[in-house]
Length: 66
Image (tube, rainbow, N blue to C red):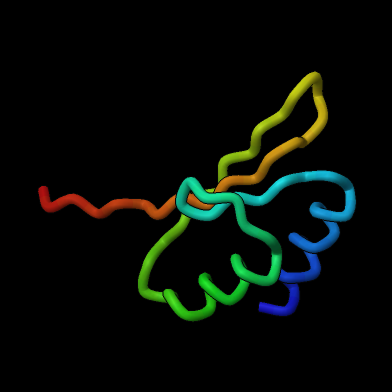
C-alpha cells in the first residue's frame, strides 16, 4: 500500500483532488480505506479539465447476481 500512498500523494501535490465514494478525501485516507476493505473492488475515474488531471475518484464496484 506504500506504493499507492506515494502515487496519490504525488498527485495531490500536483493539485489533483482525490475523492472516495463521492466524498472529498486525501491520499492517506484513501490508502487506509483500501487496505482495510480488501474484499471490495474499486474503480478509478480520472477527471481531466483541458488536458490536466484535476480529480481522481475511487468508486466501489457493485456486484450483481446474474
